[in-house]
Amino acid sequence: MPRIRPVTDLEHYDDVLRDAERERVFFTREGRGAFVLLSQEEFDEMDRAREFAFLVARLNAVKERCDREGWIAAETVKQRLGW
Image (cartoon, rainbow, N blue to C red; front, side, top):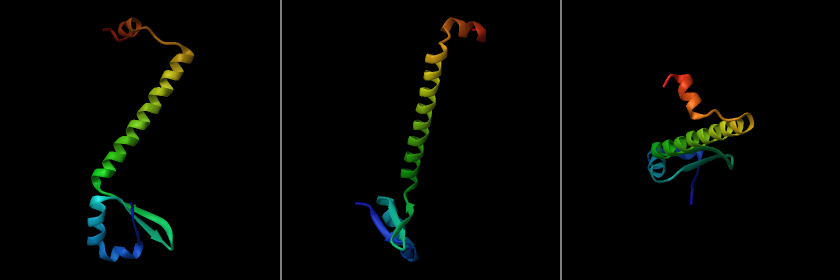
């Protein structure tokens, strides 16, 4: 269950940071979502997942282009690179 706290709870930041070590803390302002506080570990994990999703999307775009325009044989690539 997510922690939901009003922004005014930031006055007690020690408690808030302790909560954020265990799980995300959602802050509200006037009854609406305003901010999210999460641990560095969780942020890094989310960032890696975002980067991975970006790379997969790029690879899919390249594959679609190659399917549409044609692939180059591996030997041709090696020859052009001088391998």
